[in-house]
Image (cartoon, rainbow, N blue to C red):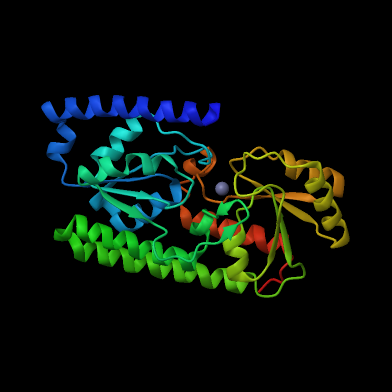
Length: 308
Ligand SMILES: [Zn+2]
């Protein structure tokens, strides 16, 4: 076990201990919230999964997201209060991938406490890359419909008295996802370029669905360092294919995109992989759909698609 892994393990033991103490205290004197509210608490690890909860649960639920907005979720570690929220929730939604390795460490405790655990990737054909399973499936509006059904079923099981409301919300949500899929198809229908260049490998699902190619400078985690070879190869690709744009991600420093922009004389465009919202997006009341429509336009520009 290397030092980083050891520290991570010790960290988890420590937060579990703190969480256990807080939960024990709350058992002795239950908080007012849990007594009065008829809304069920649904926690989600990351932003796009909380969108499954809020679009399906509406105002029947209280939704909490563990990774705060503005924070990049790869390598995120939850704080003790985050774990208390998870332990107190009726339903807990996670990505089912290596994005949240801490989920497996608390699984048995959550199950014994009766928390309904939802793997939002259940039943999906996940893409496997050289460095593991690609977690970014929420960007694909077709796959996300399956996740929406999984979450709906979990809410129906956890709170059956309001099943007709959940079903109604869920039908509307899925209709909006179908509309989004149609918008992607329409906008990316006929394009002069076939390759999108992006900093970390977030586009595999969209590329599969809407038939374009992706060159990413690093792999599935944005915390990797790019090799100078990978940067040189990408500059070469940009030049030989006359590609005019590279994508920079909203929550990440744009150092690689900036390097490419300088070396290959291309422009950078912002793309939000929906791992979280920026402060500005929160202020503008952005959600999964507004960000996705923004992303469609970014991709259509990068791929030089014909306006329809
Ligand atoms: Zn990512």
